[in-house]
Length: 484
Ligand code: NAD
Image (cartoon, rainbow, N blue to C red; front, side, top):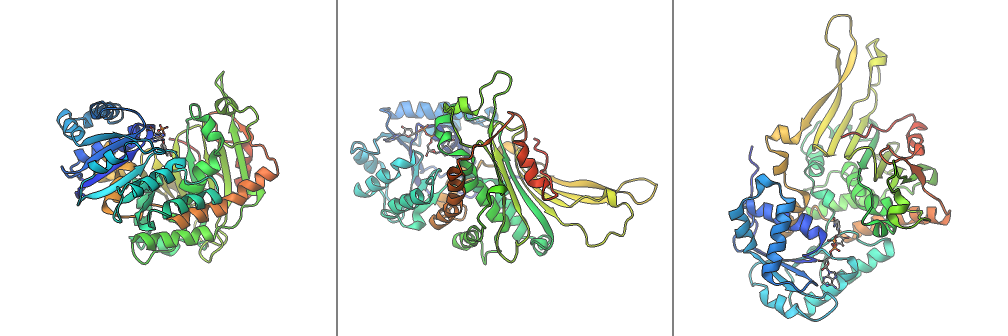
């Protein structure tokens, strides 16, 4: 099946930080892929804006190299790349200065969608927003896209929201959480709200617990100094994992409409109970076989920042009272795997003698690798010899089921940028959501800072600290194995 491609309106997209890592790895290759797919109109333009003093030719060459490096060979078509590059411009601009802004203004065309992607450090958001206004580059229909991290606590997130709000209204601000652009994450909503099957069971009466795992094999080398100021709680839990939790836990919105969806997510965040210190395990990876460990990578021998965190989260509302959500994420883990696992309760009564063979039904939503879903079901073990039970997965890898190659499933950034152009904010975080998430996160971080807690060590390539296992074992549960 070939996925439908609906062209978006013509646009001028300015990428501030257009020479940076994110632009080179994700934004520009993603735009090329949308162009290749026929989604970008021929009139659309992309304008890189960064500090470097580059000619437009030199910038196009840089974009061409990024495509060579980050788009698979069989998706690179020399003629299409040349056409794509012809739509690219560049302006040398200093976010904090005055040079370059008039050049940018002259490049913008009337009667097309104007979008400004702030792929720069958040400290520059205010400067850019202010100059877009004072130079009359942004109008009431323009959109701005802002990257994470959106603050490092409630106070800084509020300050950032206030700066943006002084130049743009909420309907113009697209706060990216690229997890929301993942195919499977959106499928979570389709599975829940387009099928009658799960929704009646989607509550504490039938669901024993939920596990959300985001395990990475990478370490923090190269960005250790940055990461050391953040840690797993700020880098992953406050945003990505919180969003996943919301999509699982939220009530059905009245319509698949940006504010209706975000209102329901917000209610979940507000219903999160404070997390008790004994329900949190923090870890830091050790070096293995002569490799550097976290403290070497962070260049801070006294670092107390966590590269791993596991926590038990309770939601205080009618639907979820009594069903814990266990979250864990870490660097340098044994495998790169992200999944949500929803474990159902046991049937009220077993008619079979083979009680030992019984295992829980688990709905697993795999975000990576190999996006898809799996429903663990009990069946009869084949053959004679009585009624013995066994568990098998009903497995649906999306790429197989839909007949598309994994490489053709649009990357999260591609989808999200096209949503910006369409003016659809459903998959972007609203300011109040971000603030509510920090309001829940802040006391947790302040608690371990006040207690002077050090994270526990864990071996590189393991499943995390021992105590994380205990977090589940003491509740009579166990983590799912982390495997690719
Ligand atoms: P980077 O350091 O690689 O690039 C920064 C860009 O900003 C460069 O193009 C640079 O020229 C430009 N810049 C810096 N100071 C400027 C100024 N005064 N005026 C104009 N331009 C200026 O950073 P990055 O990794 O591309 O990250 C950009 C943003 O995206 C950051 O907010 C980061 O937190 C966020 N982010 C990055 C990634 C990633 O994978 N790289 C992932 C998620 C979020």
